Length: 428
Length: 107
Image 1: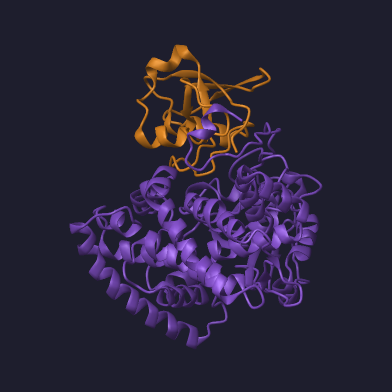
Image 2: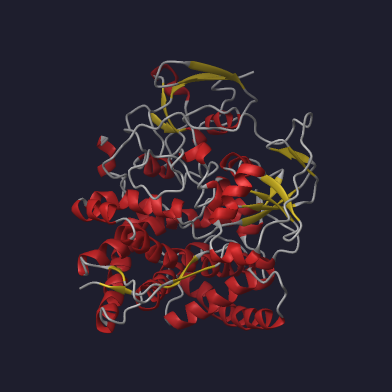
């Protein structure tokens, strides 16, 4: 353990394994057009299989065609670690400003996640100071802990015969933490959940369901009305929240509203899913559960391994701006790209032959659960604190016997966004 | 052209010739230098482009910024008085060449 681990507000745990040689792309950007392969076309992907459990399909894609054209999705799917990593190194070739963005339509605005630099940086740099480890520790860790206690009380009231960790703890806690950190003030938890669900449904509305768009418009209208009130409020009464930072950044109100709605969309489901994912993973690996309960410094490794193993965001889009070659496959300008980070995070070329296993003691390696490059999840330090160091450890402190209740099966859902929609637990 | 030399923990050195105003992080990542991750793309939001600056170049560096100082507390390998983030240091007229040591780990 190096001397500085005590100083970092987030810590690095005690197992400082030296990093082995990292696998790296040998060049950045697709300039080597000679020798490019014919584009592999994949028609065997089954939507039902992806929804039930995508990891088998990911393994086959990675082995047979790590960069593949998938007509069903009208996109190139990239499933290798090297391919996904290379994409994130060059936004001038792989743009986040994708055509026909469902995200932009869902929130009625153009947020930083769908911009490239320098426009992206203008929005992003304003909020980064709120989300660095020091501010998270000093301004927010206590709030995250208080919120965890509130919902642990509620979980306890439901009792070990009926408790659902998602419904009774992870979901309301994630919404409460998000409302506080974003600075939505007095908005109740249920409203935050409704807005977030509507925006997420819109982002995933590739089938163009008009009812989903109608709900997005209603939530956008409500959220915009609140944001328009809160911008002048925070200009007079600044605090440590994201909205306050944006309100005092000099950015146009439209940029602020877009990014607050982005934060509401992207800041709830993922931390919520990480609470249940970790308890699911530890319940299925009792030896590792014992290790972390005996040595709480291991929670850092538990979070990091769980977010790699069961990445809540499985895929996100990019679009090529020029003809390029990725991992030897020719991709024309204007192509839709699916960056399948959940697949990349199980790539044996990066994580070894046991890449598909949950192992909190594996050698530390970079993964892509939070993305990489300029769009690296702005909330990643907040998530490591709120979930990895507070919500989950506090749940085991309160209920040392916490585990999944096999007689009431849980339910996984989704592949673009994937998590447990229900996780019955017990603790006696 | 400016040059950057990255020295690995095992002593092997790689010298890169780069354009003016290239950050150490970008040069390393673009050229596949092992041991520099640059996870956040240069926003001082992670600490995965940590390098140890050789003392003879210390005076030519820009001052340590508050954001960089904060993130250097979160490096995987030990922070020393030679520690900087590679994304915050660019080659240029005042820094035509530099030699840095890569730490044993970044994540």
